[in-house]
Length: 351
View (tube, one colour):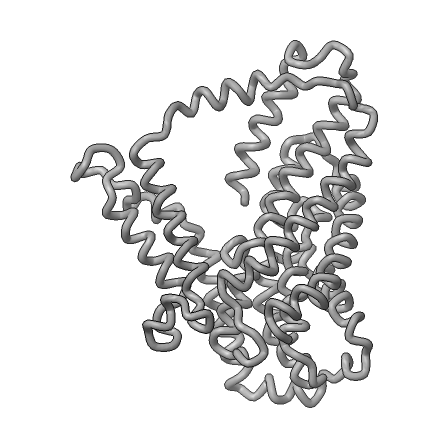
């Protein structure tokens, strides 16, 4: 998300700096208000968009890894295709709701005003034409997504040709990476490849190790007997109306994730929520899906997510403004998580 934010914010700031790029009737204070909304839309849009895909954000992968090792497939299957069926509509509706909220706050009264698109056009021209490397990456990425979507063994996808758990989404990702290490960047059979070892040094290995530690923690909770002990203690949701449960889980997790990283929050809460569901005789995914999505509801503080930090770094926003707008968006997110979990979630995951 962060690289996308950096590029978008750079364009946004360039757009705001030259006063001669603006329509004469656009007042500076109105422009400043519009700029705040634009910056927040980019930051929050990066987070919301990441919810649509299984690989879009860390908590999604944490849940997928946990479910592959310890989940009951009879309750539902989590893979790239099923996640897209649930996450993409949710991301679109949630994003549209945030857009409408920001339109009410930042854009009313700007009708008829025109902001110059010269900067965007200049940046587009500077990109030049697609190169061989660009086309190769597009083809490899599209092929990878297609393999992810068509893998599902239960739908007679290509994954049914292999033994269970031997060809997962991770194998497809590794295969795509190997292909990029082989394909030439410029000349055919040339020495320079699209990917090199230098590129691997920029991979956020700390996040990968954190996620791996989360899987180890989940395994330790089960093997040590802590999971079984929690089953005898965590019965607080038993007897609670089912339509309230996703909202309660989302509220709890979203509050914690404002002060910790979303990956760390998910590694802690996923095994606990699974134990809580088992103790309360509830489907595990009824708690795990809203809990995982709520891990990304970090919109209130600059240090909650990298996109928030980049937005705050533009100097256009104060902390109290981010808290005010982020609180409303958290409430919108909790509402939609609850609605989608109890409707589309049941259809997609079968709980």
